[in-house]
Length: 252
Image 1: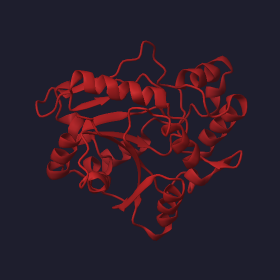
Image 2 (image 1 turned 45 degrees about the vertical axis):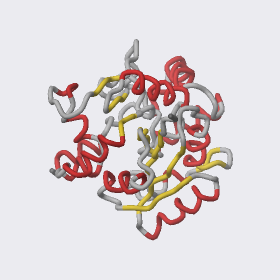
Image 3 (image 1 turned 90 degrees about the horizontal axis):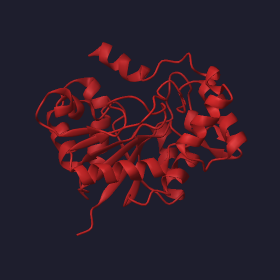
Image 4 (image 1 turned 180 degrees about the vertical axis):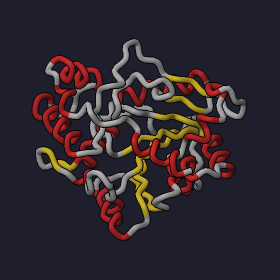
């Protein structure tokens, strides 16, 4: 029987640090378009869903996604866990892949590798962020629909609802709990100080430089090595990783 794996990327136009960032263009393509075109090369994904908010200004994201041939869904802005669950509730895929649209250069080969790793180990949750060694902007999570459903029913903290997966991670054997089985997808070297995500104008400058130098079809490691070799990390290395999540934890 075929295993169904739905990839959900969350996207919204509102951003406190860089409003409308996913619509910013490089060579006539928006960051959202670059992101989706790369993800479309994944061979282990059954379908891609762009999950945006039900705010009026985000209807344009829904429309763009549909125009480009992707499935799209609109849901709660703050309860992103509910948005994810509602997006796949009817089709109930076996597996979910979660990425975010502020990572334009997410690597489809890496996505496929994580999916295979999760399937082969039959865990409830697998990510390359449980131990942060990959560059920020290559964050990938793969988890069972059953785990998403348990989280959706039981998560209470606003940070758990806003960031989709903390409830699963915190209740996994990786964190010493016993509800979920979780595994980290390893990386041999530590590249965690490298940023390929777009939260601020400096991040956009780096992505623009990378695309100007290498185009939009390289692997995460080719981009990373180019950043290191040319000292490009000095463009945006003052920015704190996962700042939005850390802010949410403070607000709980």
